Length: 107
Image (cartoon, rainbow, N blue to C red; front, side):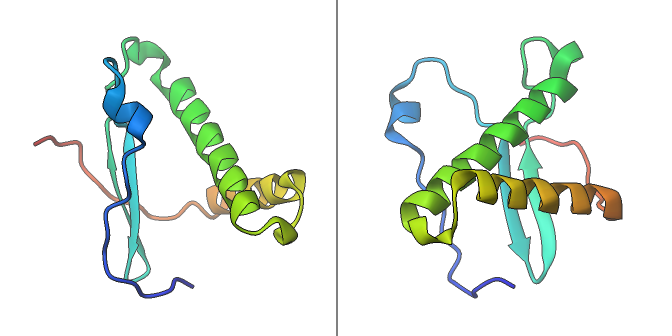
């Protein structure tokens, strides 16, 4: 499913480094077929709205993935087709109710 490559940290966009107000919210890996994530739970100003805000983050990630795939290989399909593929994969994964474990922690 995934090409085996040396572990490398992705770059932080220059705009983030130059911003005075910034916050990291998620990192995600697949290692030996198992999902791993580090998330900034409780990192919003209004944590009462946190679930909806995570939904917005997931939607933004989907659109960024579509834009990146389109830039890398425009022959893969239209942005609408790729977004629908992401949405179908997302829905299928939600319905499968994977057994994921974790704990809230910090540095």
